[in-house]
Image (cartoon, rainbow, N blue to C red):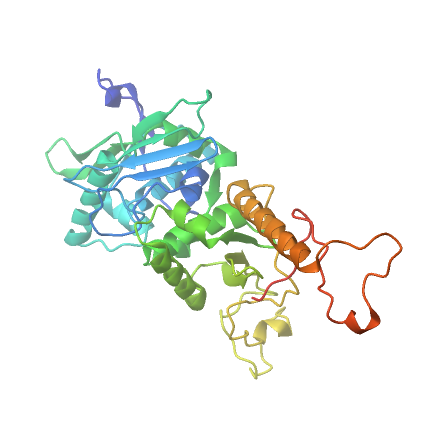
Length: 386
């Protein structure tokens, strides 16, 4: 429901959009899922996030009083995006000025509704309002940047008798336009709100954005993931935590694995987890009784392999060159350098080639002659250990 208000301030220029009741699918903005915009730790962070890849630049800054908005604070933006999309699809007018009760927001994102939870919600709103973002994403001219806060302003509402009546907040135009664009919004699993780790939450959003529901899955170089996370942890710690996530498999709807290539480079691979037949428990051991849900195939009741990988591949998956160039073209450049270095070493070992028509080796030297692999830098890669 939209109510027209008159006031010379920004608040007065916007229609008031009241939160809709109901339990509907959560939506997230793809830009927020793909790039480092939030702190992954609940600790007080004031160190800025600086990220650049191609023509994409991002700088996130915080103030000492409140610290940087965290990935848990971003749940409020997911709630706002879900409200806006749901209202638009229902044919209702939407607005950047939104009104809701703390209970409605907290209940939607799976939080408690105690007094302490209300206080945490207000602190999250303060961090979202005080954190500033400067980015070139979705700017029409090269070099232009858009600067904004995640929430322009917020205030507590009261009714005409002075009793508490919820809160009002204004989301920025940059965020609002993304939410109204179907190509820039994705539905996420409600189980996302149950993820407790900041790295778990960030990784799910990245996987959901890049992996989607592609059967062949996706993969990223670990060093690129570290840079893309905006994390303050050193790479070794970051890689250790990623390995632990692969061990735990906490991401709803996806299975993670590690791929180690011949040169020792480690990749994080992920693919959608599909359940055959009707829904069953996430883990049902082999030897289950024959009484199973109707329509369920027998393969649903096989105990998974106790390894990091969920599928047996003869070789590593192809790189995602079409939509992940910022990671993989860097990788290809390193591959070319390694290939040239290997070829040079092999040529030095072989020595000068003999004249045409002369035998290349004596019969007793055939087994000792070094072999040079015919490999092109942009051709199909050999398989690696998983």
